Image 1: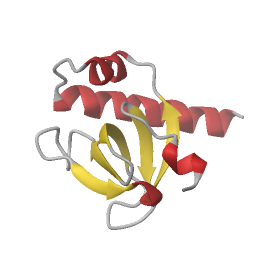
Image 2: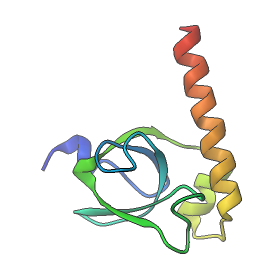
Image 3: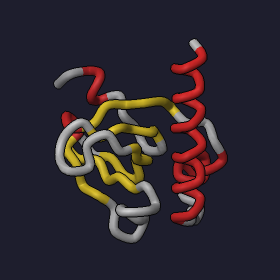
Image 4: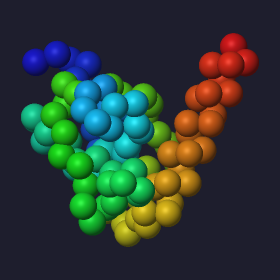
Length: 100
């Protein structure tokens, strides 16, 4: 297995590279050796996460936000928190890319 694929863990932010959700960002809610359970709080909520193969996503970053900490510790996370956090991270990445 590709080491870059296997280094994706719970609470990482990933971007879909295949399927109709291509280009969207998600938090990894659960992980096993083959599949990831992804949620973004909008189309894919915490109650109904997207099951996607590891090879169809790329890791964007290891998030150290409050939401990521809550996911790692198993605390209750709201869909609105996921949406807000992903929007903030996306805007930060875009600002860094445009400014750099």
